[in-house]
Image (cartoon, rainbow, N blue to C red; front, side, top):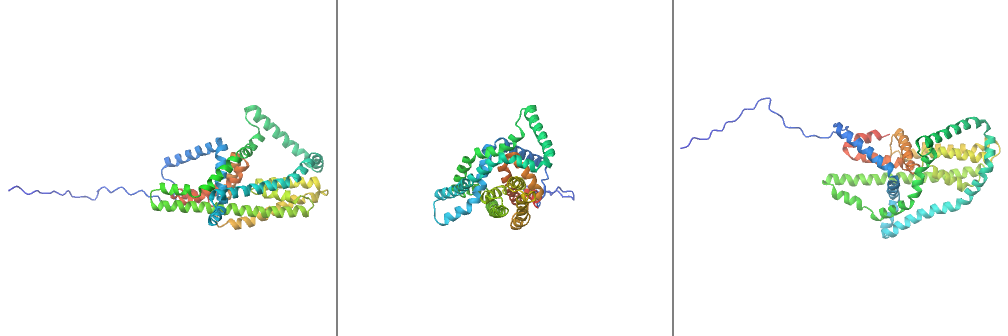
Length: 367
C-alpha cells in the first residue's frame, strides 16, 4: 500500500503581493502619461503643417463638409418628398449658385458706378481727412518699407501677397468645392455607417452616432442662425444707408451681409468702407460719418445681443480662443479660414466632449 500523498500548503503572509489594479481613465483628467501628450502635440503640429502646405486641396474639402452640414436639412426634405438624391443635390447646389450669381449680376452695375467714382473722389476724401494726412503718411511709409524688406531681404512674398493668398486659393478651388459637395450630398450617411461598422463595441457605436448627429445639428444650427442674422443685418444696413442718403441699398446690404460672416475683421472693414462712402458722397462732415456710425450700431446690436442670445444654448466657446482661432485660421487660409474658424472650433469642442480622454480639452474650450 503506497503512502498517501501529502499536500503541503504554503502559508500566506500579510505581505502577499497584490494584483495590478485596472487602469481606468477618470472623468475628464489630463493624460497621465507625458509621452502620450507629446505624441498628441506632435500629431497636431503635423496636421497643421499639412493643412498649411496642402491648403489648395484641404480647404475645398473642409468647406464642402461645412456646406454639406448647412444643406443637409434640404436634403432630408427632398428625401421625404422621395426626390432622388442626385437630383436633390443638383437642385440645392444650383439654387445656391443661382442666388449668388443673381445678386452679383444685380449689384454689378452699382459696384461699377462706385468704382468709377473712386479715382475722382480720392482727392475729396484726402481733403476732408487732411488732419489725418501726417499719421497716414507715416503708416504708409512703414508698410512700404516692411513690404520692401520682406520681399527684398528674404526673397519671400510681400505682405499684400500673403494676405491675398487664402482668397486666391478659395477662388481657384471653387469648382473642387462644388464637386466634393455634390458627392457628399449624394453619399448621405455612408461614411457614418462605415465608421459604425469599424467600431467594435455597441457602446462605442452608439457614441459615434450620437457625436456625429450632435456635430451635424449644432453646426447646421449655427450656420443657419448666422445666415439668417446676416440677412437681417443686410436688410437693416440697406435701409439705413438709403435713409441717410448714401444710396444703392441693395449693394450696401449685400456688403454688410457678406462681411458679417467674418467675425471682428469683417465689421471692421465694413466701418472703413462705409466711412469712405460717406465722405465721398455726403457733404457735411458730421453727416458723412453717419453711415459708418449706423452700420457700427447695427453690428453692435446684432453681434453683442441678438446672436449670442440665440446661440448661447448650443455654443459656449471661450471668446479668447475664438479670437485666437480667427487670427490663426485667417493667417493660415485667408478669408475662408476666418469664415471657417468658429465652426471648426465648435466641431473640435463637440468631439472633445464626446471622447472621454479629451474631456479636459473640451472643458478648456468652453466659455
